[in-house]
Length: 396
Image 1 (tube, rainbow, N blue to C red):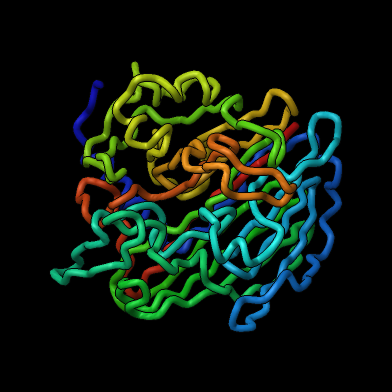
Image 2 (cartoon, helix red, strand yellow):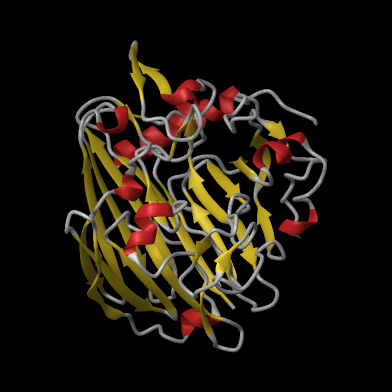
């Protein structure tokens, strides 16, 4: 496999751009694509509706908010900020839920592989759950073999968020807040997190992430929706067509921790610069695919870190015509091809989820960045505000 050394000058430049953007307090602007669904309801969305979804074992009430705008229907839980369903029309106007999930809170608590969840304090893996910052070592919660994954055993996906709904002109949405205590899951600093979900009049789903801390810490927030644009429970998503604007990716070891190299995708199954189906190369003989049992890697986006979201990936289901376009300010994209869905989970539609029945496109900074000095920094310090934005645009 051809591999390149890290382009340190490019990454350092991107890191400085990110810090400058955060310090200036820039607010990213949606650059979504207007689709057929979006133009049908351009007058504005309905006021979000709140209902009781269930209770945790300790009696805590979990609520669900239903939002609709621009032809997109979104349901969100206060538990984990979870997208419980996202419904879109196909080319004939027929709706389907295109996000995997459960119809009850008990399954989310007991066995969810992060279906639809907000991920934090650190999305993706940290090697052996350890990192050093300003000369001090930190041991995190270890929950993925010997590594820490998605914030540890009780990350943001397993926390109850404070949620407020809003309407703003033609847009509707939710503001979700959670404060992580100093030392929670081993992370330093009290982290105050605010995440805004907005459904625009065009039907775009926009996520704005913000966080502040009282001690130096590391932060990497993302969303873990499992997409099947044919519809949840309707078979494999490996026939979906995918493109990713990335010339490099981060190879991993057998524990799925980046080696530190930025490898060229050219001549490998990881080249999605031209549109191809997931199935085309997912079963190729390749050590990286063996490590992940398919695709479960971070792509180094050609655009780097940007002040406004730029288009980085397109996913299309030929059978329904549904298309997802992803734009982000982030430098990385984790493409996971649903390798560990094993037929033991029953979804919202009553069907069993099997390997490849959905895929994830998680915008992010790179995995294990706290231990990889050549990667863009994920350090957040007091007085600074972490800000990133991702926009999902839909068409059919």
